[in-house]
Length: 378
Image (cartoon, rainbow, N blue to C red; front, side, top):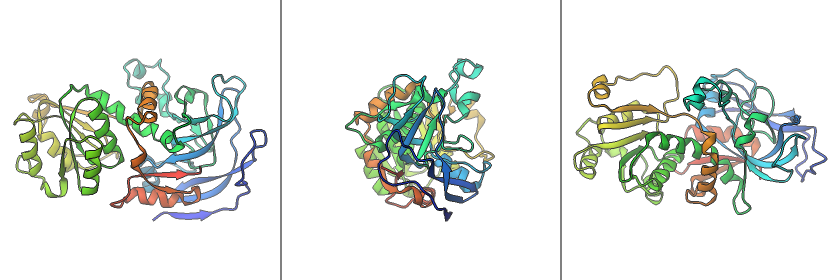
């Protein structure tokens, strides 16, 4: 459980005039491992090429959870990067935005000029690794605060939210972007059979986006309630992993894969849970030339044994995908705002800003009825 310290604040809860912003705001400050405190900070001051946004919704992301849980980054910081809100100040040099517009923010934008960018490896770009929105301290997202400053290099990722859509839908653009980026890395063909291991919020996004791409999705999870939702999101086949009894070539999952692929094997497998055993089982179920995508193995230092001949002789590709791609942001917005990918059923829990620590705790230890968790100030 995370410790919570409430500090006094002077921010009014009433509507704020664009010309009369408060000087201070509430923010959830990371002070060390499992230590989050609601504190009073100055409202960020913006430069001529920046925006100031009043936060309405911020999704809880597993990458932030790990940093908070294990204390892997130095404090103090204000986390939260799946952010949407209302523009309240526009820098004098900014064009295309005005105060009062509802927007979804994008926290990483690459330089487009370095060696990594020339190879389309945007997530490895030094500029990309900088965070483009901040509530103060080290720019680290800032969505767990009442206001965020949008730095100049992050402006290309800012998207306006249509009137029919909610702030919560806007906040979901970032995680959907990360999933679409991974799907595109696989370069699948219509009719390919793809395993998606894990049907949490990310796995369900994979299931729907893959179905839209024409893939036949085999979804696995430990919870039948999530498998039921996976079928609604487009899964053609489902398997309860708790009954699969992982044992290479001798499990219910192996039998199902053999049947639906006519003994060929999976075209691809996406591992949306941080399980080495699941990754190894999935790799064994790939056809020759198939692809294994790791999407949840983000903790450095972990290791598992993989038969190198399966990569060399069987030509099975091992891939990873991390973070978002700003060049996909407009396409992601169309998918989410048109509700071809309807993210609303994924959001199960909402917490006010002062309960952010509780939101993080639930996300780090999900229950059977919890999926996507949002810190809401709307």
